[in-house]
Amino acid sequence: MSSLSSLYIKKEVLETLLKVVNQKGEKGVDITISINEESNQYSQNISSYVSQTKEQREAKKEKFYVGNGKVFWTDGKITLATKKEEVHEAKPMTEPESDLPF
Image (tube, rainbow, N blue to C red; front, side, top):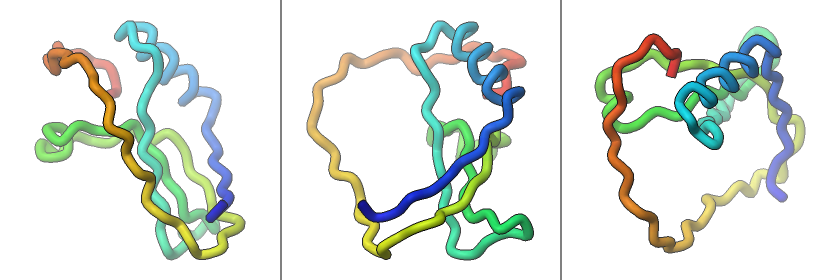
């Protein structure tokens, strides 16, 4: 184990996530977690948001933030996760325009 962290997500955000997942017919949502070296004014150094595609990042689409938190223990030895080779069926990446937050 390399670190322990806590993340707080408000009830309203959870409800929004569930609503969008159900509307899109998805099984879940991919969340990106950013850990910073310095804390903000609330002693937090973690932020999380719905993951974006490369196209969304390049278009500078606004991130949908999920929650904030902090690392409260680490041994300083965080390593990258290794990727297992898997075969996935290609799925079209066309997304209709909608007013959903992500």
